Image (cartoon, rainbow, N blue to C red; front, side):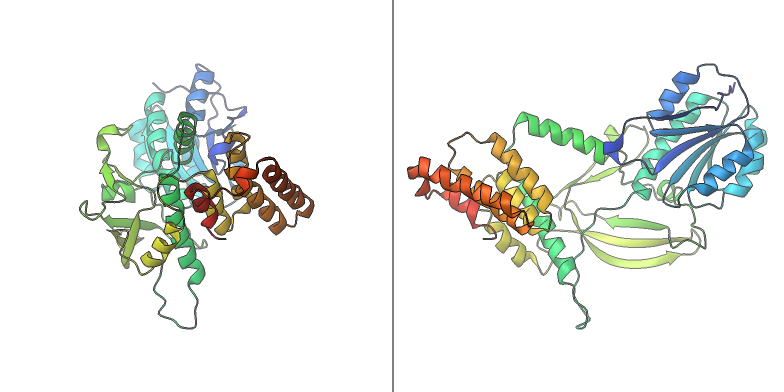
Length: 399
């Protein structure tokens, strides 16, 4: 039996690191029954970190209209208020999913058929929350920006693709550096925690209809198009960066999901518009690492990393070359904290920090780092002339 929660307060959770502020949950219900209210709110906040509770249709519509088009609103609404507000707010880009919480499931299912953004009608709150959680997992994947680097064969001599191809090459070099990076238990746990935050909800599904159901047709006034990626992946091709069927480990039984490794390379095969489903379909094929014209360049740059393990100084230099000096400095400083006071690598690390500060027009800071390098050499004369492979490998990159 459905029970309502008094919508009078606003709630949010501390989830800034997850960058989920684009999503907001709205609960519209005029009923003042507050049974199990706090427990329900906490369950919802564990899915979406912002909750707005309202009782008035006009106030709710005004709130939605005032939201930015970059916001993504998920709404829970009672059956009676849903009949009033859904027809008027369904067209807004920012409203992406609507859930009807009511006692008359059959009666409300009749009118919601006209509105594809209505994802469920339920009388049991736990059932509704479970559906919101499952749907939101896919919504995040669709709505948040994709991290993709592009490589293209330039067929237009008047158009440069050097910047795009450069980013592609260095993204592959960065991954190679990370895979060879010497780590400790703290680093591994930090990576696991970060991945849980950054990639929570990302999904590649082999069920075409299920994936398609979350691609709402955009408004004609928006510069957005619904896009579905179709990937043909042959396991015999993906030897260096494999993929796996993780359906047995899915949070939701019955889901068919595939996990691709970071840095996987895909070849664009075709782009076509499916008028029946009103979606653009981008067909791609998983490639091996050497199936692009810049592999020789990538190998040349990668060889400068040296053989064996890399370190945080190497990582910093790759990031520096990629135009990310702030991140480079962050990892230089982290490496500095890890090194013992007489480590040979300190000389080159001080010098790198000095060069980086100079590039950022922090000249006083640059001088201080170079002074540290000189002082270190004077105290450790034997280190100044040391020429081990370890130092050569660390200093050879991008000098």
